[in-house]
Amino acid sequence: MSAIKVKGMSCNHCVMRVTKALQAIEGIKNVKVDLQSGEATYDEDKPIDRKVIAEQIRKAGYEVE
Image 1: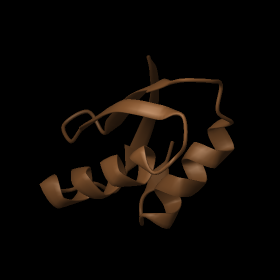
Image 2 (image 1 turned 180 degrees about the vertical axis):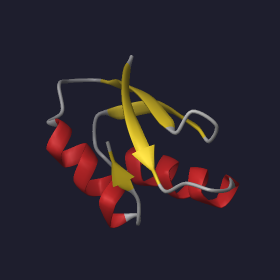
Image 3 (image 1 turned 90 degrees about the vertical axis):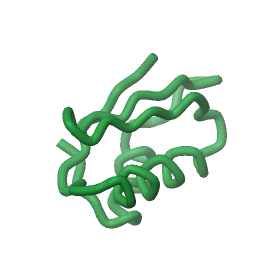
Image 4 (image 1 turned 120 degrees about the horizontal axis):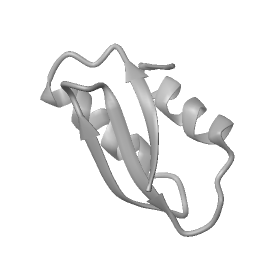
């Protein structure tokens, strides 16, 4: 399982936006976003460049640490 820190989330709506953004990336599954810790965890079918993941989160309106 991989993890990435997400900044700027403040509510469950934010959690859903980040979850959907990550699920849209081919090869990512089992996405879980924790509002309290500001962390998103996920499984990868194949290695995915972290830049691709960070860009998708930024497009959803959030920052990556």
